[in-house]
Amino acid sequence: MPSLDQLMTLPGALAAFEFSDKGELVNGKISEGSSLNETALDLLSHVCVANTSIATMQARGWENMTGDKGFYPVEGFSMIGLDWTTVTHGQFGVVIENDKADLEAAYAALA
Image (cartoon, rainbow, N blue to C red):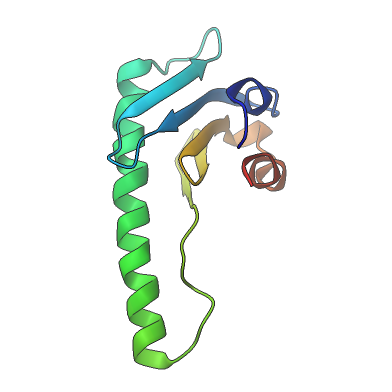
């Protein structure tokens, strides 16, 4: 389980957060000067759970229809925006600035 403090040390980290399986924000840290706030992290938490659910449905459907394996279970995803990217794994996520993002480091820290 990653610590939010550890996630906040990633290059370009704007926020790190933990969310419940229902999408509720459990805990979050936001870098000073970031335009993000707790309301945004709560909404982002819900988006993470919703997207993971949809990706899980697609992965299971693909495996069942094609017989190909290895797509399920879905453990996390990335959502790329214009200025920042969110990377999740399990019930943890980190928001990082695109121009400073090291996605491999974010995945490693979350795994």
